[in-house]
Image 1 (cartoon, rainbow, N blue to C red):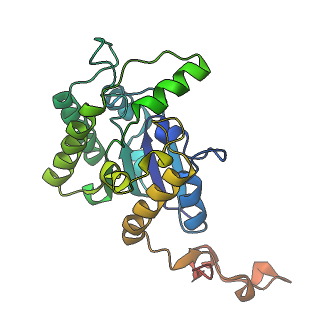
Image 2 (cartoon, rainbow, N blue to C red):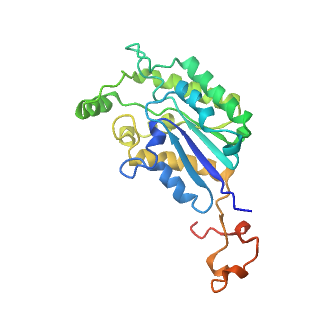
Image 3 (cartoon, one colour):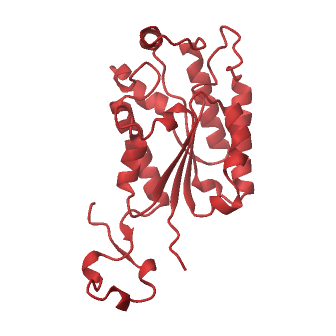
Length: 247
């Protein structure tokens, strides 16, 4: 029997798609490093997607067969939902629908065998209009207008859904806003800079460590293996664990 590696899934929009970007916001890489030989960190991030599109694609990505072994499932959506209300863009998802979409995703994940205590919701983060506008101008991009005043509505909606279902949640909006110089967390007024990546890693790590024990690594410590005749090791070698000496 082969070894089944536990999995941590990050599902969301560009904040997740960029989670392994070494130049800006490698918060997924930070997690992968922390849980090496403990669990795989899998990103399913889709730049520009909303909770509406996320709800549609979720059943096309996950099923009973590949949800097995998932010990933590992070849903990080909403950044794009609040886009475009001011210019009637199709990108906009009303806050009521945003809540419903989160509810449907939670229900679906449970229906394919994922316990709800493994689901973690992350709220949208703060948005700095001036910084984002400058970035759009400098890069020649044209995005739907975002309204800073809408963000708290979506943050509260996300937290309400988490509370209703008794899920773990991270209020990244509030945590960033605690810092008087919070724009430093954002590289372009919207996406994480390195400081933002470090912050969400620091917030996620203790929650994940309650779901996946990081104190032991999979497979034995190298000094416990017969390196001259490795075939003489016990048949259950794959299912032994060794101390995580990186702590």
